[in-house]
Amino acid sequence: MTLAMALRAYDGLVLATDSRATGGAHQSVDTSEKFLQVNRDVGVMTYGLAVPGYAGISRLVETVKSKREELTYFKPIADEAGSIFQAVYNEWLGGEKQQGREVPPDLKVGFILGGYDSAANQFKISHWESPEFQERQYPNGDLLAAQWHTARFLLNKLFYPEISVEQLSELAVFLLVETAISEPTVGGPLQLATITLSQGFQRLHEQDVNEILRRNQKRFCLFRKTLLEVFSGAEAELPPT
Amino acid sequence: MGNMIVAIQTLNGIAIAVESPRLANPEETPNVISLNQYTALAYHETLSLGKHIFETILRPKVDLGGDVVSIATQADGLFGEFVGRNGTTDPLGFLFLGYTPGGQGAMLGWFHAGDQTKTTRFFPFCMSRSCPVVGYLVSKLYTPDISLPKALELVAYAMTQSRIVLTGTPMIEYDQFNLAVIHPDQGFCWLSKEATESTIGRNQERDRELRIECAEMFIEGS
Image (cartoon, rainbow over all chains, first blue to last red):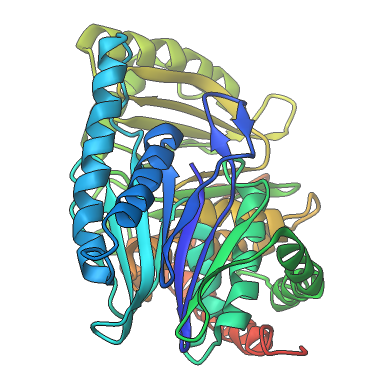
């Protein structure tokens, strides 16, 4: 599993994920490439089953490159993406069956498309998950997928709608690191990108992520300290003896 | 349908939070049952099947007067037999809470889902069937010397927050949310409705404080 997020700031989107791919008990690698740039304004991310996931996002990027005239704006790209993801998943599933391997129904692959739709003048987030690959849109909110629970808890406390893309990138790193503390399937180098009107899709380099991690150090401490402080006087009433 | 349960072991007892209709309908059997003064059983997955197994297998065939380890060990074989005989694929979960013969608190869980069974194993200090948020909060707030009253507030907070994350519901209704303890002297007992509501109220205040304290955390230069 992983933690994949498309978060919405007042001035753009932040796409963020970890890089851990797990394959069975106690086996994991931290090199999984989980998102790619589709065009200037759009990025795509995957989570869950690593092989059909990467194949799906790669094929979408190739298709958009080969059909530049038709696939310029977010909506036609999203329409094409759904059928590509479904086709790639079915091909992969067929291959697994041919080799006599059963795919447990709880193993899923998901895809998140985020970007600026210049036709509608809006930032958009769309989501597909196996086996149905029904497109779900998130016109106002954000999307947290796979191991999302801890990130949602933290987002409930720390997010505010006026947050900027720059600050939201720092919050996204905070959510990924805090989730990795208690969730062993989340971890490894962090992958982040921002999408803004002026800059389009911008992938953050490793040194940028490291700089955010450095700036976040005091926030990790502050959050832990605050939690400990608010619980310092906790004393529930026990039943009388 | 399963329900949520969180239990934390402390040096002076076990704190338990459970989604259960006990307070709403005292006639209804809650899914946390006192087996003897110092031992309780929670079934928390397919509740109707859990209740059936308790009534037809556990109660008649196991000596429920013993300590938690002895009860859980006897039950382990019977659960396995039941699943094998019936080909059960519905999820089942049983958690035994109580004291070992040496007087140490212990939590032992048995789980089954699909065609996989996890036989009885010990949980070191925390057990939750619900949501990773519990594990996160426990990793931040648990200390080995945590007191029983503090652990009760922690299980209540963790469960409330999990519920909000999972369902979007702002608050667990008071009548569906229960707290219990297994105390070394008093044994198993439920907290009253008033004590439960008062714990929830304090946790709401605590949550408000947390939001205020963290409101400026991501402002530039903070």
